[in-house]
Image (cartoon, rainbow, N blue to C red; front, side, top):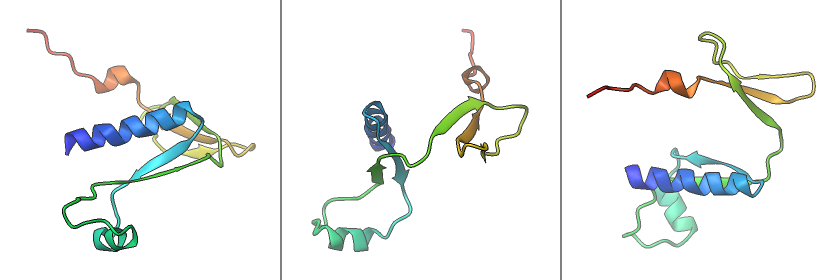
Length: 94
């Protein structure tokens, strides 16, 4: 399940480059979806990707301490705190 996750993320990154937004959905009724789109049994649906034009502006910003809560400012901009990449990467010297 690694390759399909990478593929889904790559699709979303490409969509963002073209001004689209989207999200990966994992919680869905597989059989209902298969029936709706007339998909054969041998195809396995791992994810659903929803794409569209973003309705809101989202700004990523550095997380302060351990506060990861999202918030909106007076202009309705959605702020999403993220940890610095350096704090997520562990380097091992060999």
